Length: 115
Length: 117
Image (cartoon, rainbow over all chains, first blue to last red; front, top):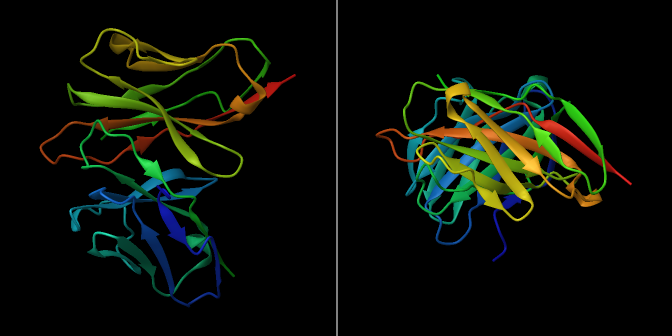
């Protein structure tokens, strides 16, 4: 079991460019979560999918951020027109069925740096 | 809205001693789950232990145990016989049980533990 795989590990973009972050959940897991981690804000929930359907995107910035899960094996987080304040570690996590008592398995994260 | 607070930003202890990390939470739900996760120096976040709000007995896993005080909305993590490799950032987190199964996990700000020889 390779765990949750996130690619790339590091991404550097220029201000105004687009960034796409990829996540491959653990095989058989039906729930996928995206979090963002910064020194100032800590771990912030962004969005989550269950059985590929978006369930809660209450943490997603309304502009420039979007997430998709086109199939069971991967999810993407896209940031359009990146800004310096988007610099953070973006973490993907998965769980077996998405129930509230389940532990999350986290990927190693993608460190996004916007210059 | 749910909120999780860890007031201790950092703790330093000597190896083989016991340490307690504090966490308080706010919720309107009568049922919820409380978790502790650990983030290592490499950035990896791993699950440690869970407490179900409806259970009176404190959860224990290996050398991790919890001090659950529901009237105080408090869930402390106790690590006994600490080891150098326990040095990490520890996060308290909460998930409410609601009709939308799989509610989001809300994290506290974290406590950095340093275990020194």
